[in-house]
Image (cartoon, rainbow, N blue to C red):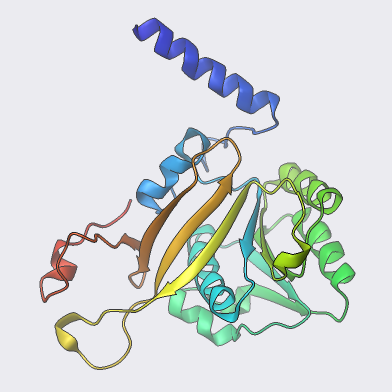
Length: 245
C-alpha cells in the first residue's frame, strides 16, 4: 500500500514537470505565510514562477485585491528586491503600502495611456533581474498574451500579478492561478476606536494542478492570520487565534 502511494506521488511530480510546472529552487521553496491555503498549490508551495490573475470587475474587488497583493509583496520583497506596478488608471495610493510594511520607494509605478503598453512593459519587466514581482492592471488577457508572460516568468522567476477588470472579455489563458478577493468587516479588540486590520475572503477560483478553495484571512500588521469562524469575537480573540507559518 505504501509503495502504491509513493508511486502515485512520483507520477504526480512527473506530470507537473511534463506540464512545465518546475519545482522551486531550494532557497525559495518555503512557505510564504498563507498557512493552510498553501496546501491548495502543487507541492504545497505558493507558485512564484507563474502568472496570478485577480478578477476585479467591481471597485470593492479591485481595492481588496490591491491590499492582498500588497501583503504578498511585503513577503516577496523582504530580501530587498524591487517591484514594478503598471496601469492606465491606477487608484492605488503609494503611501498606503506602508500599511502592509512595503516601502513605496522600492516600487516603480508606471502609468501609461495604452493597454498594449501595459502588457509590453510587464513582459519586459518580468525579464529583469532585481525584481521579485510585476503587477499590471488590464482589462483582459488572451491566450497568446498569457503565454508570452508565462515564458518571461519562467525565465527569471519573477512573479506576475494581473488585475483583470472586464469579465465580459474573459477568455481562456494559461494563468497559474485565478483569484477573487472580497473585503470583510474588520474587528477591533476590546471595542477600541478606529479601524481594525484588513480582512478578506480569498477565493482561489482556479489553480493549475492544484485544489481551488475559499478562505478568510486577516493581515495582522506583519503576517497573515486565519480567521477561525469557531472562535467567538471577544476580548480573547487575538490571544487565541492561530498564527500562520
